[in-house]
Amino acid sequence: MIALTIAVVLLLLCTAGYGYRLHRLNIQARLMREAIRNRDFMFQLPTRRSWPGERGLLETLNAIGQEAGVLTARNEVEAWQKLTRVLTHEIMNTVTPINSISQAYLSRPDIQGTVYEEGLRAIHDTGSGLIAFIDSYRKLTQLQEAQPCRMAVSDLIDAVRTLYPQLHWQVRLPHGLAVHADKNMLRQVLVNLVKNAAEAGAGTIDIRWDAALLVSNDGHFISAETAREIFIPFFTTKRNGSGIGLSLSRQLMVAQGGDLRLADVPASGWHVTFVIVFEQSASSGR
Image 1 (cartoon, one colour):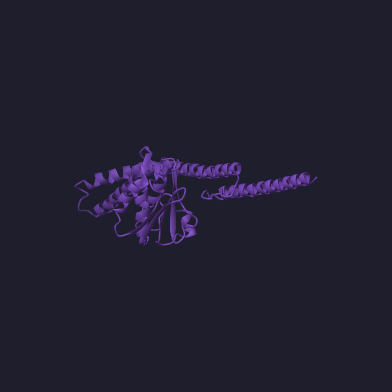
Image 2 (cartoon, rainbow, N blue to C red):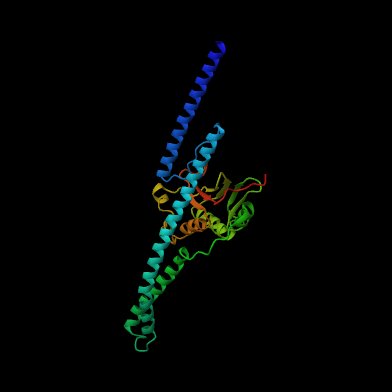
């Protein structure tokens, strides 16, 4: 009788515990769904203190969230590339004939030295400047094909550090950390991030690994309004900025199967944190 009572109590406890875990799992799934709906692809469900089967499900949900972020970024980049391609084509079709005609008139002896020369030269110079401007934005639609391979992250960061000796660097990476990426593209992304940070008044760059490469700095804060537009081509807050750096950097990461994001909340102690996501999980020499 006592043994039966103990068995019933244990069964009830197990049932209650299982029910509690199912309820918690349901709440976590809802949180993940809301995070994805709000485009918060950095949201991660905790996997500590979970049962093996439960942990596997949570890790799958986290992987789905990250993949959704990568796919969303890819779709956004493709949309901007198509728009940029159309705009540059239409503008070039309009400006090129004007530039050619104005150049032809400027070479005529009966125009040189007259009151018309100044106006024609202004038209020609403006057209030439616009053509050069458009040529620079063709980078957004004419990226070279990525050639990703396994590469050591610390070696690449050391190469970028030499370009900015005036900055203080804090690099905290697992020993032997390697990622699957295109070396030249990733270098350009890091250079763009550090260059922007330096121009924003940063004195220190912090790079660490937390399921992705986190690049933080102590430069000016990025407002919520600016954060919503920071990866839009041509958008810039700089007086002489082109608005191409961050947009191009994100496209370089998407071309490798990854993504570049601005963290909603910067890493503790820092003003700005960018998140570099890679196509495949990193490996460590440990």
